[in-house]
Length: 179
Image (cartoon, rainbow, N blue to C red; front, side):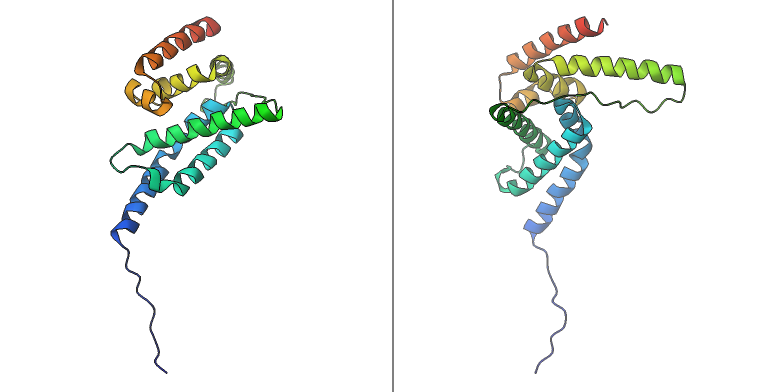
């Protein structure tokens, strides 16, 4: 009987391409997580949305068009999964309770820490009070630094609508926070 040595696995260009895309996804995770937490209003729900988004993206990787922006595609998936989840919860009569997470742990000074947490809580509460459409636009453009054009593509709306939503959201945030 002939003894065979270990099989040499040669990766194809397609395998290398998929690995490159997965690497890009890994680098995108912090931004995607910020986006998802801002959408949902909590770290736990945001992390669940990130996981759902990444699973969906990996499952449907064949649908992504090489040459287009992977971050925009994944933000769009996250936004759609968020909206779908909200619709499903409404149909099932589930009420979502959104509690802002405290994220300012960088200060050691108690007074500054308390002031920072109160300010962060006020901004986060004001952000959560915005209609979801305005909140999505604000997060993409003002937090993530996505261009208005890319935000319009992600949200699947005209660029003028993005501009209008951000303008109304800014006014509401200023009124709610007093700054």
